[in-house]
Image (cartoon, rainbow, N blue to C red):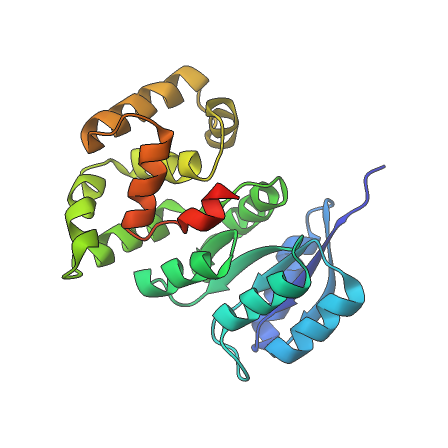
Amino acid sequence: MNRKKRILIIDDHPLFREGIKAIIQDDSRYGVIGEAGTAGQGLKLARKLRPDLAVVDISLPDISGFDLIRDMLKNFPDIRILVLSMHSKADYIVKAFQAGANGFLTKESAADMLIRGISHILKGDYFMDTSVSRQVAKKLAELPDKRSAGLVGYDALTPREQEIMVLVVNGMSSQKIADKLYISSKTVDNHRSRIMRKLDLNNVIDLARYAAGIGLIDLNLWKK
């Protein structure tokens, strides 16, 4: 029998932690092994309990969630991190992924979305629901810098194409994407072809560079 995946929750609102814990523990694959209300407490528990995944809020009373993510990955490089935040602005989302997060959900996300996110992240994937990805595209398109030009093309993609693009540049194969989204691999390939055509790109390397250029991923992390 496979052991339950060990999950640590770091959020400064006790009632919210209890709600998240109940959702997670309702799935037999996972167990919440600890809760923390500050980044400092979270680091201590991570060192003691060695969780497989940490659910982290960005707004913490001692240091920012971004700094916590960097500290956790520095000390525990194998840990997976899912940001669960009240913030849905693009700046927060991009900073979270640049800090090393593996997924981002808002606190308005449905319970099943949380479980899906945890499942995919623990398999080595990245996860971001489509409502968040659209927020990223919309916000960055308004910025008066070179990223906005790239987002003209990105904003022309359908929500499904945007979702698939994020999965592709984070290293997922067509079959894995198909399994994740409950569609056929042929459908994924068709979406990929349309993405490349709309963005006038030739290969996945070009696509990764494009995604990094508009702030969706950190290319140095992608190379790893």
